[in-house]
Amino acid sequence: MTNLLPSGAVAHVAATRKTGTAAEDVLSREDFATARDEITQWEGYEPTPLVSLDALAQTIGVAEILYKHEGPRFGLGSFKALGGSYAALRVLQREISAKLGRDVPLADIRNGKHADDCAAITLVSATDGNHGRSLAWGCQRFGAPCRIYIHAEVSEGRAEAMRALGAEVIRIAGDYDDSVDLAKTEAEANNWFVVSDTSWPGYSMPPRDVMAGYGVMVQEICEALNDAPSHVFLQGGVGGLAAGVVAGLRQYWGDASPRVVIVEPELAACLFESAKTGKATNVTIEQETLMAGLSCGEPSEMAWEILAEEASDFLTIPEALVAPSVRLLARPLGGDPAIEAGESAVAGLAALIASRQDAALSEKLGLDSTSRVLLIGSEGVTDPAIFEMIMEGRDAA
Image (cartoon, rainbow, N blue to C red; front, side, top):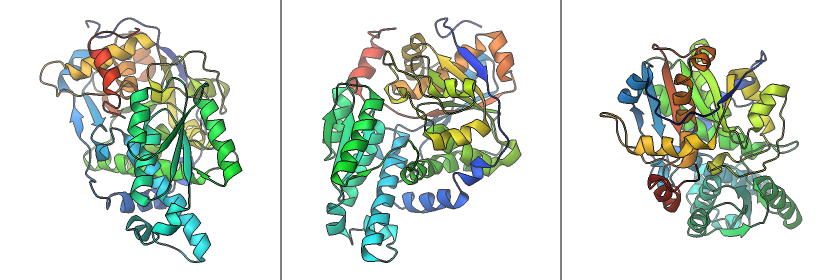
């Protein structure tokens, strides 16, 4: 096979999987159903495309590549639209219900029946871009003030997109994990409410709601297929996307659920290290990855509970694979559809192609000509300036 991507060292570790029921217990079927019933009623909801990349599949020697393109999701450009905004709604529901001493339906908040109460509840989060944009969008819809903390390397284009949705954006000098710490500290000092996609001891409800929201995407995928894929390659980050997807797949397909391969930048590989140690493990980020949404050094403990049981393999990819993968989607092979994707969307695609270019790695992952692989294209073009730079070949790689 002619190499479609530059040669690069893809690191692999096989997981020591635990036996358990985390995919049913950490995220229950009721959690997913409640999120699905609410989100599918939102104005602008429609399933995002699930496209088959037939020419690429033939070229790399697999039976099928299915790519779930989240770029069109609610006009926000990423799957995160399903998580942060829904979690915001759930925080408002819990706080207003507690204040009034009765259960308040989600629909009442969505329809503005508690506008004055919402206006008195400030929601905050740290973000690399997409989660904060989703939270800002949700706060704008539901009438709650929003503060978003971003680190030094978050692009100004992403910051401006959040400001345009009414958020107050606070940029710090440190990295993502520093912005998480500041958001938590200032929220506690001011009686604000953190809406994070990562969990920590004593903080679990919003991250659970975020992952439950991602189940809408999983349901769309499963209902479009007659049979389960053989593999799913999933971006890492803190693990929320991966955990939400694999829990949804397990609940839908049972024992036929696909083999789970987790992919991270080698510059931010907290889940890879967690797989090596057998427990949730933090890493220090020395250099920012181009895949901004995956630049996370601390895994979500709740997400890790699921991934420790469900993930079979963990990979890291070098930066040199990212930009060529973006260009390959935008300028596809044969009759495949052209897809404009952001940097964090292509981690799974890059890892799949690189794995098929390495016979030994393909064997380790159980990839062959019969494999049917699911990829989550987690974002579209969320920063046009970066996308233009990549398409013109002006990338650091």
